[in-house]
Length: 296
Image 1 (cartoon, rainbow, N blue to C red):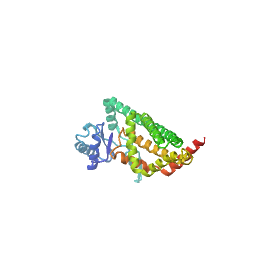
Image 2: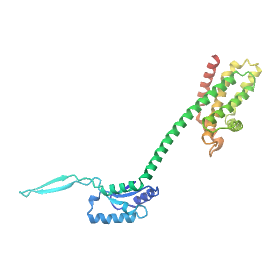
Image 3: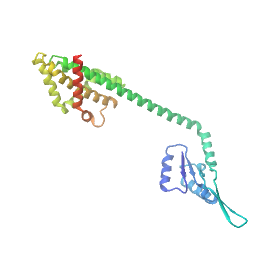
Image 4: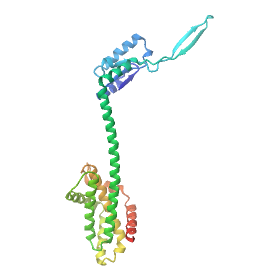
């Protein structure tokens, strides 16, 4: 790294230089616009810079340069006594800086090459990880949707009261196990059951009314010997779909955080997921898709 100044360092520049020095990278301090100073002034200024940067930059790595020297003004006096002024561009003077860079490349080239290779590999790894994460999110969304549809149809068709809820619970366990494989965090059936129990306990507190409708609709099947299925199938199946969506999203967050709910715990995580979903649109779309599947 090249830290560039064009005069004596300010306190803020010195603080910045100290911060950079902590990174343990090769560091040069370059006095730019050196053409503005006389040779004596330049020598004294470099001495002050070396004094201020002591312990941060090696003495030989404090150099002067002129990246874009000011034009040289040439005044010519003609035979008639009149003066003619011309301007001539000057070549950059970066020889000392170039020499130090070459010396560092020779001395630490292999280390720098290894660092650059490591940075490239790290960047590549990050990009690969992002693509893997995106693929997992897409696959997870498809898994959750497939289980939502399967559970919605199963609940809608099952004529036995409350038994449809038990069947739905087994589908939830299968979904969570599937999501664990998607995210590379395998779960046992017992762990999946415990996770679902935790999620449902929070959902019961947050959406008691919905579960009440679910149970009433399930009971209606028994009262009517299954004849009310036509009436309740779409509504109850949609509720099952919505519940599965919530369980899937909550399980996904738990798995993404390495089998952890985070600082806020399960209640906060489930509440945030509940707030992020548009319940009415999900129920409407779910009912439409379930009825379409039933007709088919």
